[in-house]
Length: 209
Image (tube, rainbow, N blue to C red; front, side, top):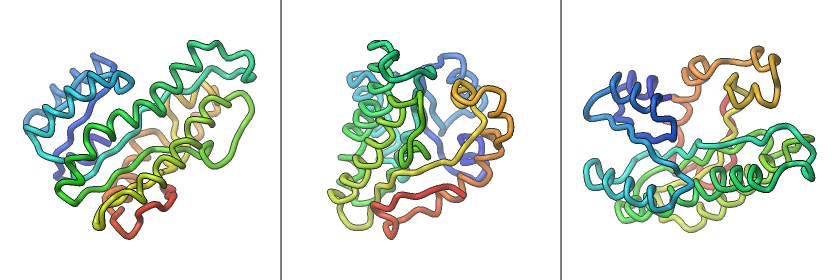
């Protein structure tokens, strides 16, 4: 997505926990773009990062919450407590942390679109991924409730991105994940879709494609 947004002329600011990947992005795309190592599950880290970003770049026009973990395939009662906690911490609390520290600036400016990445498993379920399903169902409700709290000319939506061949998908699907679009292929379709979301979509559960 970063590549595609930048190709289309947009300034991209992002974060992630993978230091090498963030370093690679920062090296590939200099100023005015910005990429930082931040764990979204850590509220203090998010608060410091958001404050710095807002001071340097202002409130975002499009805020994407797409960080997520999936549990290793297993019946719910066999998912260890630390693994369950990690999925909850990133997929729900991580989204809440980012919203907590960016949305006030967006509300103050009375503009901006918030997209919280859900999943097909946020509107359906499957065996052995109960923790992940629980978090994505939570994102659906969180996003729709947030939509009711925003001023006019803003929007918050839960987005089902569709099925993408990623490392995370391969944990659940194995080699069958190769039958789906790569992240780069998906971004060609998804980024224009994301840029087309507006206040008219506030509260609507959307799906790419």
